[in-house]
Length: 132
Image (cartoon, rainbow, N blue to C red; front, side, top):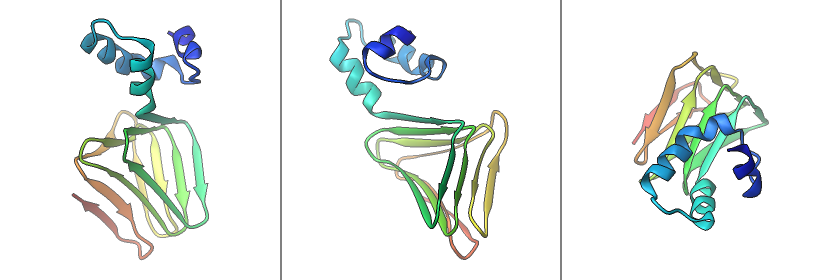
């Protein structure tokens, strides 16, 4: 599988993509390379990263899904994660999202997911909003 991903020019860990590719090949009897590239382009997987910003961080699953896994996120003022009508975001599995006034920690094997225009926002005033 890693060789296939390398041929497509993608530096993505194969263990993360197993379920994604299994689903793709199950639904597509005779897929071609272009179909697979287009499907992979609509999927972002952030794993084991440290993301830091001075003011604001926004994750918007606008053209595809976003999965944040084992990641530490920090911004002084606010952090938001949201989806559009046909996308979803997933945040969890030993991840944290921290501002100067709030912190969301999601433990091992647990996830927060938003889909269908849902989102979560940690605000500058210390409040946390869940919205649809």
